[in-house]
Image (cartoon, rainbow, N blue to C red; front, side, top):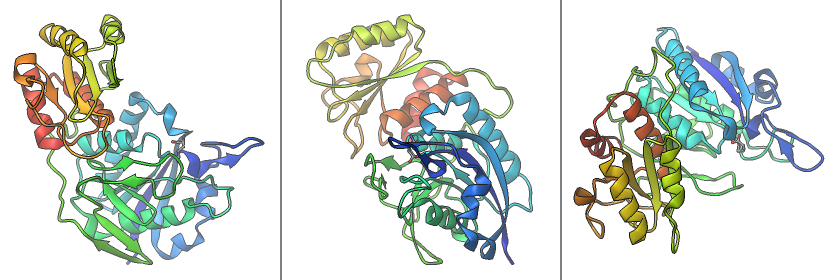
Length: 327
Ligand code: GLU
């Protein structure tokens, strides 16, 4: 029997159309996108919803909360087998991780998009949509949490990283590798990875409360700390350092962040390097400085976790534990 899949479109390059210079994201409707994949009707029954139509660089947390509510509502219906979300690739890492932390279901939730606009030669969108519906219909993906499906590969929201500005094979999962590969109509699972239980499940679904401001600062030679101070003076409650190597920053930045941590700001050391964890107390004494390390989470995912943790009132002492448990 065919599975029942909900397809929720939010925009992105996949819904893009060429203009005289390049292309505009988020132009085509979900109906138009699905017309380019007539093979879908042989694969699943589906309901298509146009949730919004934006480039994902314009995604924000209040829209994401509404998206979470919609996905949760669909997953709670017994007749629904899985959900596909069509989304721009630029912020897919953050959106999928956010959804993974708060949605309560074992059903597959599969984000897809494309790197080439719908009107381009050899557009990758139609096959990505087909594969995403195939993945959302698959029993094999139950319990893996929110995943990203592009270019015939399935990645966990926890590990996925956009690694190339324009290539159709942009998504990678450093260290852990892919969950599964799709060839034709077959899904080959390569990972025993299962979703880790998040303490935030359903916690964001009741109220659309604004999130605290958390800013990311990129590390570089002779970095200046004054913008970090400025960000806190403007209301930031969390600072994520995309530090060098194992999350290192120069002494003046460390000193500034020690002062901020003592004043109750959540300071997280993440890394500008794509591969490998940020480890505690190597060159910087995090225990003494009052810092948190991001473990396996990239700066952009560390920011999502800190925003949710601070909004739900998690204590500073508990935040490091969360990174170890969820990253
Ligand atoms: N800016 C676009 C977006 O994220 C480009 C990326 C894409 O969709 O591939 O929506």
